[in-house]
Image (cartoon, rainbow, N blue to C red; front, side, top):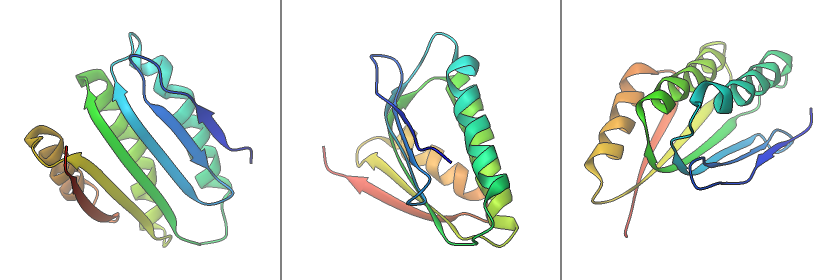
Length: 129
């Protein structure tokens, strides 16, 4: 499967899914005008990768989103749901959640993810600003 790279824009994050390395990264801010359109193909591509994957090797997901709006939140839940399903089937999925040490909102969202998607191996990373 081809890797997926989308450069960051003023309102959308950098998406760097290196399927060959089993490393998925999201970085930046997410408040695109149409979140379903922006995230839809990304999630569909991820689901194809997860459905076709039979190696069982661990997948690492690095998320460093400084801001995301409510419609992006819904789409992120869909993305994490797909990863959680893969983890439930026996593949280790490691989620590295990066946030500014002073940003309680992003920190608390990470805590919510940890509760809602218990199959993911969650690592919280507070970063100094």
